[in-house]
Image (cartoon, rainbow, N blue to C red; front, side):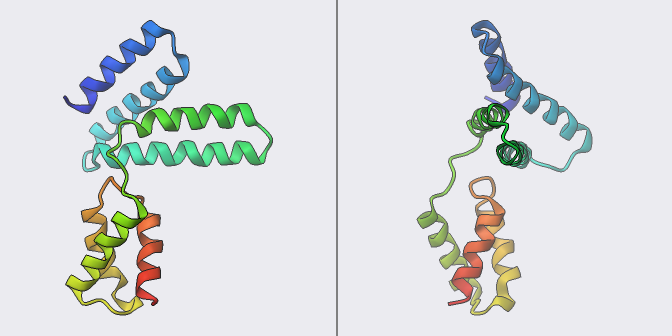
Length: 143
C-alpha cells in the first residue's frame, strides 16, 4: 500500500474517532506530500524525516519558553509522523554498517569522512538521522 493510500485511510479513521491531534499531523503530512510532488526530486521518507525534525525543534523551543502544552502537541504530532518512517537503526546496527563501510573504503582518518558519509547516507537512508551518522563517523575515524 502506498504512503498516500495509507495516509488517506488513517485520516478517515482519525476523523471518525474525532482524534484531532492525529488528524492535524496527518494533514501536515498530506500537505507536505502535495508540495513535494510539485517540486520533484525528494523522497517521501526524506519529507517525513523533515516533518519530524521540525516538530521536535518546535517542541524544544516551546519547552524553553515555558509552553509545555504546545510542546506536548508537537511531540504527539512527531510520534504520529514517525509511525510512517521505516524502523530506525539502533546504535549497534549503525556502528556495524559504518565499520563495514570504513573497511570497504579503507578510510583511516578524518580526511576520508566524505567518502564514508556518502556511502553511509545511501545505506542508511531513512533509517538513521544524518547528524547521528555524522557524529558516529567522526567518532570511528578519530580513533
